[in-house]
Length: 296
Image (cartoon, rainbow, N blue to C red; front, side, top):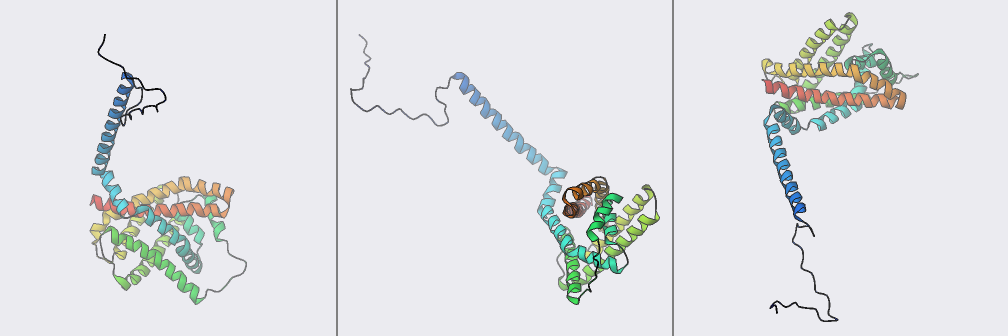
């Protein structure tokens, strides 16, 4: 007779509780199931190590350091801020100044975007004058001037942040007004070159050199001569390359987008594309300045 006895539960007694399963184990798992779980955990650990190593390598690389610098200065937040300020504050000022100078604001804007004739016509529909004219009051003129100064001040604060300089207080207002004059001189010269020169190679080359002069002078003026000319040249060159690339991209894609959006959504569709271009301008300014400083 075997010494091992088997305990039986008395009749009517409550069923005995089953012991809890071990945490992380699967019920009724055979040898094959446990092997699959171990393989899954091993693959997950390897994927985690690979991802962490890839992130460390990217952060140590040149593009990683560039992205860290762009994120540190809030690239996209500043770019959207510029787009909003330009649309609400700077464009009305542009319309008044160009009209006073006998120019067309739509043609100036189309030249900046590099639009084809069909897209330029769509932009011109936004600036159609009213049948009756209204005098510009002193309050309106002051508000327009303050809006334009706000845009120049935003750009100045960007350059001061990117070059690690302090703000100069009320003296910045004179500098911002000087930059606005420089901006309209650049726009007038660019429009004159576009009308005088034909083809694409010579106007493109002269336009690039004029863009280098504009961004180089903009940095020097807005930074109040706190940074030497030679130190600003790499950033001016990098910004001009990005600016020229944006012009080529906008001429190729923004023209078609403006025409298509006008057909679908009307004038608001054109405004949406212009806002996208203004955001891209902010990205160009940040990217060109930081790349130029890295090259230097």
